[in-house]
Image (cartoon, rainbow, N blue to C red; front, top):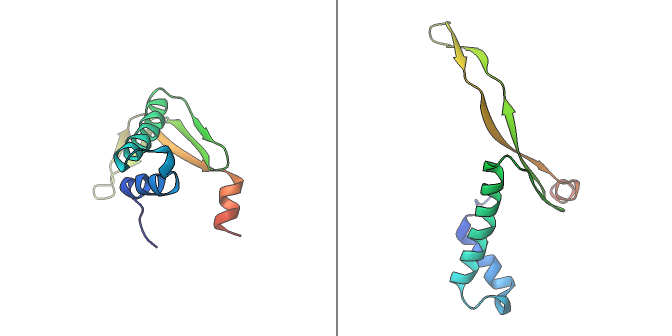
Length: 97
């Protein structure tokens, strides 16, 4: 299983849509713009739904008490926001036919 990078994404954009991009640099900017849009929406607390792919969303986690496994002392974990991804059923079905 290979790991795909941002460069792979921009190369695929260029190869599959060469007539729409003047250069590979333009495809890189387009890929960067999409990623930046998703990031900005998540930072604002919005969710991003890509039909047939999935939904990126931000979840608020409440503060909680955890345990230091070395000292067995309780520690406070502060509240935080985490990014979640829910895959669309079409994506799940294509991965698990």
